Image (tube, rainbow, N blue to C red; front, top):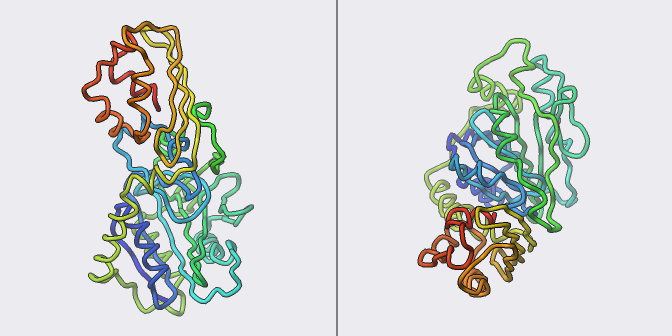
Length: 325
């Protein structure tokens, strides 16, 4: 088995690294890595419906879709991610407990009473400290999980608090529950870097011969995949299941009700109802919006030369865009 510590904190690069290694590695892998502040959504989720769009935009937090299913999670440098890549899994079955066991054993050896619970979580008492997910590629298995070590739990809650009434779809929804940090359960707290080193050596056991880094050739290939997929709007947002969006907003010009159908991330149909006043027929504005990405930057560009007040009196450009998310 190859043991990798990946020091990069770019979520797009790190998720690309997992996919590239899954497809190209010649040996089993255990890897530890961290992301700077980011929201990571499951493969089958509607990205818009999982995030607090205002908070994410205000704090410049990237939203990146991962290869595996499951729910959305918030990452920061207080969260450690671990990855197992196992070759020759001919059964084709997912097995969460197999890969969670060495992690729970490592924590228990430190005096943290951690156990694998339910479908894919690790818990200490009633507090979730890890979520896990898996993906098969032919006979290769990717298992990865989070380890909340000293994460900003306020940010975890704030970034993942959408308004559920806005989005109507059949995508996989995240299940929120009580979470906790590992450092708070340690009998003797240690810096996160020391914990990372401990975890690497514990999992390696007798196989330990030192950790390796990604090679220059691997980094080049991973960076290309990150640019092609994990930094693309289509993968992170357009890949979302089709959905309907509804929002009612009280504006200075009256109530504006937005009803929108989005397919492959593109606005297929939109209706703007309400008791507002306007000089021009609002259907002209609706026609302008159809065919545009349901993404703030794209909508700003589409409406750059449009005077919204002519269609909906008393609402500015920024407020109108807010009503669309």
